[in-house]
Every structure is written in C-alpha cells, then in structure tokens.
Image (cartoon, rainbow over the protein chains, first blue to last red):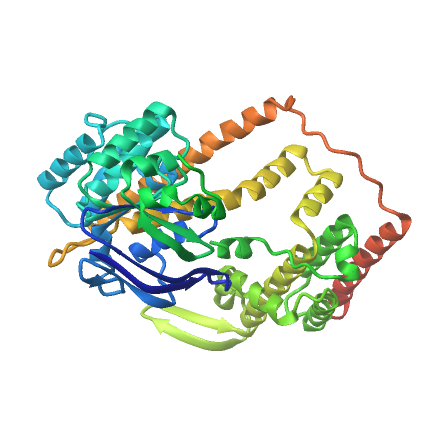
Length: 234
Length: 267
C-alpha cells in the first residue's frame, strides 16, 4: 500500500536528513518509528504526503506516486497529524477544523456533517463540535487533531509523537484509540510501552538511515541494538 | 523554515571598525543622514551624489557587500512610487501631455526632477538604514534607543516585537503547513471549496493566530511577574559617550547639515 524506495533528502541548507530509505507498509499494518531526536523521523513522515520531496527515490501510496500531479489525491490518502495539536488545529471551533478536509475535497454539506460526526465519534469526542480548541485539554486536542484527518477517510495515518506530554489516563485512551482504528499507520514516538502494546512492527531510524526494521517483539529482545540507539526497554 | 528569519534579521556578522562603533553614534549619524536627505531640495544631484558616496564607502568599509545592500534596498522602492503624482502636479515646462476628453494630463520638467529626487532620496535612505541594521545588533540598537531617551515602553514594545516576531512567523508557517496537508482532492471531483469559504478559512486562521498571540502575551506577562516585574522596565546604566564619540557624531551631523545648506545656496 505504501512503498518508499531509495528515498534521500537534504535540507535546503545542504544538511543531509534522510539517506536511502526503503520501506513498505501493507494495508492496515501498524508500524512504530523510533529513533533519537534529529534522526529524521518527522522528516520522513513529511515525505509521505509530499510536504517534503526527496531529491532521490520515490514514495508510492495506493499506486499513486507522490508528485505534483497526484499531490492533492495523495493528501486525501495520508492523514498527517503533527505533534503539537495547536499546529494542527487552526480554526476557532472543532467543527470548522474537522470539516476543513472534507469541504476542501468538495463534498456535499450532508456528507461533510456526517463525516465530522463519525470522525469525532471515532476519537471519542462526539458532541464537542462547537467547542474552541484553546479551551480544551491537551489530550482532547490530540484526539480532535486525529479526527481532522479521519474525516478525510485516509488509508494511512502518519502521527508524530502522539503520546508526548499526555497524562497517564489520556495516554491510555490514546493507546486504545490507536489499537481500535482499522487503518495502516506509521507513528513516530519515544514511548516504548506504547510501541510494545500497539505496534507489531518497528522501524528504527538513526542519522537519516533505517538501522532496524523488524517485529517489535524481536527488536525489544535485542538488548545490544536497543543500547546502541539509546532506546529503553518498556 | 529559516528563510523568513533571514528576511527579518538583517545583521551581517563581520569584522570592521563600523561594527565596533558604539550603537548610539551609528544611530544618530544614520538619522542625521536620513534627515539631511529628506531636507535636500529637488534636483540637488551633487549633494545626492555626495551622500551616496558616503553611504557606499561605509558599506564597503563594513564588508557587508555593496551589491547585496543595493539589492536589499530595492524592496522599499514600490513605496517611493506614491510620489509618482509629482510628475503631473508640479507647474513647469511641458514635456509630454495627453488629452482625456475635457481633461489634460501633462508631465513637466519640474515634475520629473521632483519625482526622480524623491526616488533617489528614498533609495539612499533605505540603504543607510540597511547599513545601520547590518552593522548593529538589534539588541544594541534597542539599548541605544533607550539611552537616547526614547520612552522605555516604546523600546520594550520594539524589543518584544523583535523577540516574538520569529515565533509568530513560525507559528503561522506551521499552521499553513497543516492546512496544506489537509488540502486534498478526490479523483474526478472539483476540490478546493468556494472562494468565500477559502477566504473565511484564512480569516479564521488570522483570528486564531491573534488569539494565540494574545494568550502567549498573557503567559509571558505572568512569567515576567513571577520574576519580579513590577511595571517598571529597568536597565543597567551604561557608560556615557566619550568625548571622541561625541565629537565624531557632532562633526558628522554638521557635515550633513553643511551639504544641505550648500545645496540650497548654490542649487
């Protein structure tokens, strides 16, 4: 469903960020993306929907190559959720924000409303349409941020550190939400316990390269590898 | 993400006597130069050339790149175009004229002189300001303004604007990126929404940005309070200008005044 081939990326100032990234994700597969700060996790995620484009290599999603021709369609397939929900939520009310994607896609009013309702129900925030994001807790804003892309019916979720900064209960709720959502996802995180619980497969990124791509259980048993890349056992 | 910072932050690090000079001296001399440029009569080409050579020599001495400074100064040129009406409002000898029914539009020689003078004056003024910004850290400039008795509240506002402008542009950029990520289309379906909806979205984004700026200001204020802020902006006392620096500032200002005076006498 998602195929990344020989992807390399340098920042405009010449700093190399990604080097020869190859990976495939099947429909419905949930994959964790680990690695220290600055390893290139966010940069990789931003390539999935073409916000950044590699100088080399290709990203193909549902048979569509990420390029100028397909960019708008690709953005409907890849739901990108940023780490800070305040970046994600730019509208005054929850409804406006969750409805942004569907309205932009040119859907009818009734369909837009149905999708907003469904997306908010999926993240457990039904009935909050008219609330203002800046009056909500971080956990609630994270949920709404996920709803803003669920309303677009994506096939892949790309989440950037979704559990960062959450209190234990909000974090527990998020873990359950990610377990329930029947979508493929690539999730960058430092939360090893969440990785063990939610993601059957894990990719480790270090200095812009994939250094490990294996079943999470295998990877978490490899003490040497965990130590080498500064990862903790859950 | 770094580009807007480069656009806003004009300081160019280099080793030069001009960089080392006290910010107050540089600020006063730049202001004197700009005021002198503004006071010059129309068509004082010799005086304009003198000021241009002064600025360009200083730019050269500061090692900040003559071409770069000139290129940067072009951004202000469109503002000088408001002077374009001078072309047709100054009485003088006719150069060109058009008729529109009962009206006649005429360009005069005095008009052309006045317009070109304004254009060159503003271009040179912008270059002088750019020179100042390129060789003086903004923080030093703020300190200089305070020492020159600009009300502390104004200095504080300038300082906060400078401190948080970058944060606001970053915030706006992240917001735009989030919108971009969800600006999707379905195959075979017109996308993008209506013009009015898109305009409403932009309007609400601006509103959201404003609310966040407002809330951030509250948080910053609380942080200031918790470090003992009591409404008075205090600063450490600085050394007074040395006699040398005073002399240099006076001399420069006097020279600029002399050029203006001379161009009225012999213009």
